[in-house]
Image (cartoon, rainbow, N blue to C red):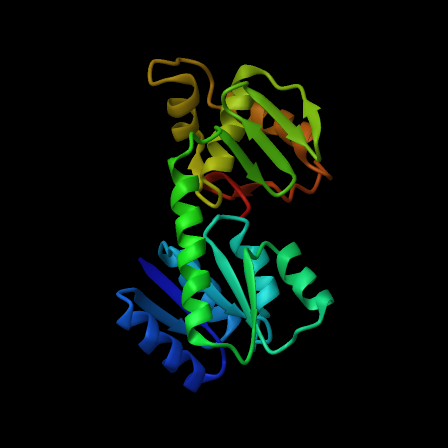
Length: 226
């Protein structure tokens, strides 16, 4: 099990790291929100411990950004104890909350409980639903919703947006989209891709004339802006 511990109090981080490594965990550390977010994107962690008050990016904002691409268990760690702060932490996507000063035995117990819960969840059948910002793609039912409302798409339009939401940030050339969506033996015009992307923008973008979701990489192709 690998855990990322994030706090700007280096002595506290050192103590948590020492105790968790003695428990058999692998522990990485970060000291500000920006570093934490980059590390969470770069590798898979089994659990994150985030301080709320951190330089560059707050723990709450880090938690919200992590929730855009991961369901990793998150414990918020903070000196604040007001109910409003706890509520803010949970609303950002945190799974648990512990207030400083704390007993390391309590932190270890919370970690074990979350990891057990996560392991049980992983054993359950996964729904084939992908959520990206305000777009929900149900691959089993071949349905797409925007802001909770059903959007009528053709089969090819669905295939394109499904590919994009499962690979946000990855740029696809028109040729690769033809191969992936229409098949290697398709003999149609490459402008077919442009037509379908244009229609998708009309249906899914807030402002199709200035797309912020399906973006053009000039000279290369299209991608979903992460």
